[in-house]
Length: 232
Image (cartoon, rainbow, N blue to C red; front, side):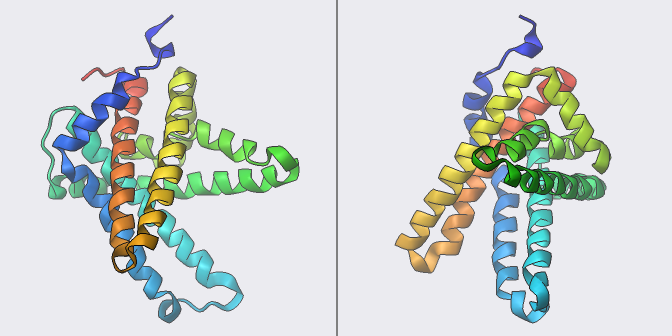
């Protein structure tokens, strides 16, 4: 079996050490979550809720914040895999140069999954299959923009090409990402929020940052492997 048809499971173990030695990886997800919490309080004064535009505009803004924060986290994680010591300033500078690509890639990713969800609604019991397939092929979209520097729209097609290079690795990455983000990042965060009400927003921010930081480390390393055949 060719190397690019195998799955390097050691990435998932080594990622713990990478994030442990580089706490900067957690900074941007925490900032993004706190920013969204603050914007949530301003929803009424800033957005007119007529016709549901309040929710739609705010949700789009949240997606953009999450996408850019994840892009910055990927940049920090990829640098950590190479053994470099990044700073907030250095990651931010690189992120600013790629912000257009990252945001356009985020919008494209969200739009495709949204359309896939609408189409899946006509399939009844297997409604989730269509968006799941879309997510599978687009799992490397933001890494392509943030790490690869690929222009926003082209990042979607680049992701599909990267997935085709190693279906097994992409499938495992999608499964692990969904399990960790939803069952650990959201459910555990919600549980802690109900147990410690006055610290709820901050507890959720920290838990989600840990999950996103770990997933960014795994994703960055996996993307480098399939895109550039790098071995750190």
